[in-house]
Length: 389
Image: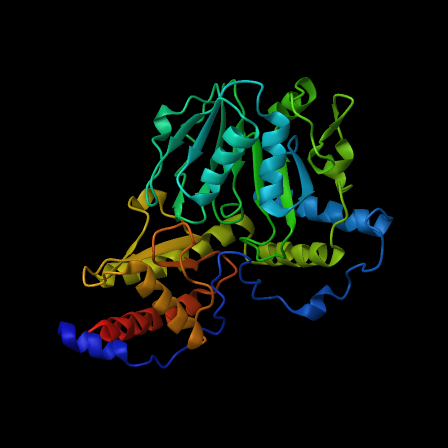
């Protein structure tokens, strides 16, 4: 088909619409099995310190360990303030004991750099890369403490593996894995502190975070006291010993039992689709739909330059047609058109990222919905391009 014929075909509205137009990168789409009436057993109006509350919180911890394959000697805690709170908790309680390297290639990683340097005032070695790229991981010395994001939610660039982390390292690795956990294979033996939130890959509700500690991280907590005061919600030790109750469901502050029930429902669904392997397969298939679309259309491309570091969850795209002189305005218009048509909500690029689209491909998204969305992106692109003429 000639180029002009393709353009005319794409300009017509597609016949098929995604059954679920929710492609936000957080909060993300609920699992396909979700229904409000399935949360009817939540112990609402009950104390989280009552037996029923503790049981549900402990079930959330145990289910997380089972799906993710977290080693038995690693502690798992439910903490306040989502993934952000979990990362801050790790940084404020454990950094400062030795030299630290801060790695950043997107907005949230850059935020952790700011906290380390301007808030904690650490003499940190900072290694950064532009959006679409990743730092040279072979230059990282893991005898230092290292803070990094596994999957750059705002750039769509992920760590390809943990081979760069030494088995006999002296430092701690503190990993923000919020858009990687439940979609990518995390090497637990390489990670000392791992954080994520319920609102990402499993489509849970906001405000609750998870922190996973290796035995090495526990040893740091029990042997090191930072020079700065710690807010109550950051305190993981008392009298130089780990507060073990936190890792049995005795949360630091009051959790939402409705959100806990929602997370338990998501964990059950994850098990029903094959656990971690099934979730990874679903995300890979979803990202593959977009990869094929980019390969077939020379006006759009993945922001991540190296296929080995491309995310299978937060897939970020850029428009490459040189006729587009105002990329930000054009991308916003495409995203707005998709939302107005009711086929894709919240798919604009993150505010700090280069102009483009960001489409969530985690396992709670159905591949058929992404397949239905691609012609709509082509339609929106050609419609907005025509408006430029």
